[in-house]
Amino acid sequence: MVPPRDHPLNEPSRILVVRTDRMGDVVLTLPVFSSLRRRFPRARLVMLAGRYGGAIVEGFPLVDEILWYDDPPRLVPFRLMLARLRRERFDAAVIVHPTLRLAILAFLSRIPLRVGTGYRYYSFLFNRRVYTHRKTAERHEVEYNMELLAPLDCAGAAAKPLDVPIDIPPAAHQSVRALLANAGLKGGYAVMHPGSGGSALEWPPGNFGILARRIADGMNLSIVVTGTVRESALADGIARAVPGRSVSLAGKLSVKELAALLKGAALLVANSTGPLHVAVAVGTPVIGLYPQIPVMGPRRWGPYTDCARVLVPAKPQDCVECAGKTGAACACMTSITVDTAYAAAADLLSTGPLTERQHVHES
Image (cartoon, rainbow, N blue to C red; front, side):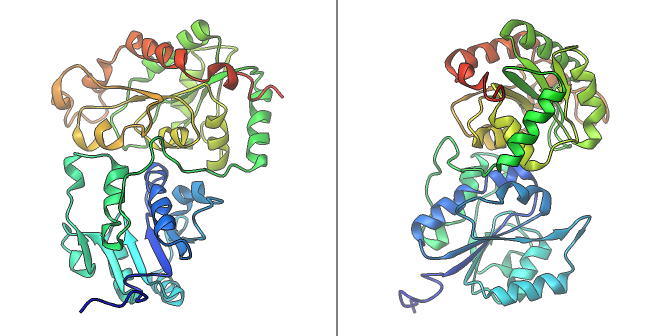
């Protein structure tokens, strides 16, 4: 029997979208809210997210509320999380990045429509299953996320570039201007993000340093290096390659300050990591450095924009020479030359909004 038109399975008024992992993953999930809002203009849209990754969503106009999944460094206790979800009385939940714990929470919360993958051993806890294998990396992560909306009759293509208006408070812009001024940097700048938080194989730090120096000299840009607290030594080493015209801000920026920094940058050069997707969302040109391993590669995780250049190794194929070499440099990523990266940056900025961005932080 088909439910009536106003039944919550057809016209949900309270919808939960679950994405509790990293910042880049969260950014690539935001187009889901655009599609949900078009299909259900009066519905309340809520996101369940982790504190760090979800911080980028605060102020996002299409998300009515964020429920926090953790209270760092721990997850919210199961019983407390379950009680909160039950109080919300959601009609539907879209579990974009599932875990057993999240699937059980959705089931026990008595959410009538629970959408998730059909390929996990706990998929029986979802009553609307979508059968796609993300590990084959045949499509972009954004497209996989959008496919999960099919049971809600609102799946569709996401806008490219990402149409996700990240909210950046004025205080974040002011803080970034102060940090750059204190470092003695004026005019335009490029951002280097040499780490990946362990999510991907990385381009060698020495290459980042050489490229930073060439960009500073050849494009008249200062260099700002970003990263986590744990990547401070890595970032400091790259900043030292451009004495007098660089600063390392690794571990010194909030998520919103990072977004403000990227919005004002002429260019971002990064491995496959979250800040690259934030840069795309705020309209900054990007150079992405990716291995050939499909699960880490650009087909699934590349910049979702045409204002980008993606660099992948010419050889060896599929990183077979580096597999299992813990701590050793990846021969594949090393094969991407600095000359190639510099040429890509020059080509990208020859058609990008460099002149406009050079003066973002001068006032």
